[in-house]
Image (tube, rainbow, N blue to C red; front, side, top):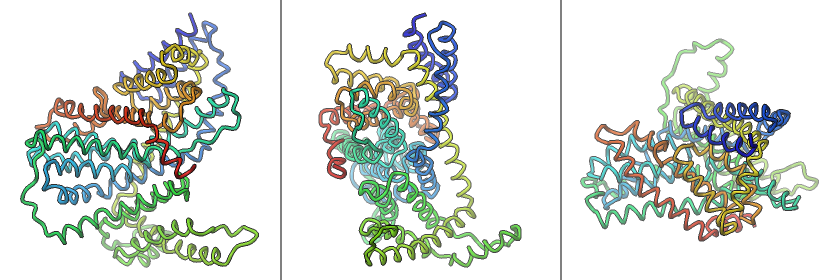
Length: 545
């Protein structure tokens, strides 16, 4: 049997097994091992190549960048449990509700804010489906427009940083770019980091938000009956201003602390994710009700700790507010002063700043203890930690299974097959890029974005990046393209999420027809980014040269 035939059959078999609904990680790893044995039987594969798996797995375990994945997941799940979306939707509905299409614009705006603070598509779609879909239907919105807007807004978390998908994609692109540069004889390539990809994805994410809002405004003009204005919401302007400030300020400060520290070069994505976890705990403790006093029924060894928590927690929001402000102040101090005291010559102002930062750490520590105690006693902390462990385990098990698949695919010569096919495409690098984007778009109908990233990008990435394709632009194009995988039937996850919480009068056909305009909008956005690569490369160039 030809080795090329085996590699093609392995890829097709893996796609078929995935579409049958088997677990992703075991489907990829099991299919790869089966074809490795078949290839060995036909003397087309050397099983000794599998000896490289331990080093790959160890590389994943010691990769500091990937530590950001469970941290960002924890941040997103904690904010979802804290009902931040509910406050934002209510407030934005009051702010935009009196204009035609205003409620849909509110959903898009809230989706953008949640994307920049949580990045969890399932939680965002479910939350907005529960909260905003009944209101939109009651206001007389076209069910198709309402469903499409909620699904599309919920997927913004895949392109707007900080995003788990960008962390995973950035890590894989680092390896693909280094391999491509070594193949061209450059053994000291310029580094490509997740921070660069975060900066590169920011403007394209805002472009999609603008296109979504533009579509709603067009519908409001051409078909006013599909998105009428709300009536009877006459609240005082002063009260509305206060509510908008109270709803927007806390998540806005969290976004500033996380994304701002990354783009300003103050923190790595992993460090910023840790800040985000602490900030999410503060926000959750701020909105959760203070639990009533409980009897000290814990073991005697725990009772001093309980007494300490009760002494630190005065029952108000002041400890949490002070800790949040102290955390922001620490970020500012890190930007303005050099807080490393191990230097030979430390100016007095840096020493003073270090002392202030140390005192602020005590304030943050008090707030953290109070926040952990409140979320734990409210039953939220344990639930968030379980969800974080489940989601993170799923991601990393898929990564390990994809490593087996990639190794066997290359051992069977599949990378050479892909390279030959791409080089035969007309139009050079442009033709290759169009072909790869088309294949990823089609795969998005049937496979999850994580599967496509872990399987396809390591194969096609080095080939395309050898053609002088800008790696940042390439990564942003992949991210925008794969965002559509959440919207395209039959396996679009956002569609299933909304279907599970939609009222009985919403049919599956309503949801499918509603996402069609937004899929077209995303393809238009992909075309704009393709024509104007500066959308992806300008901001990283300004920030990081």
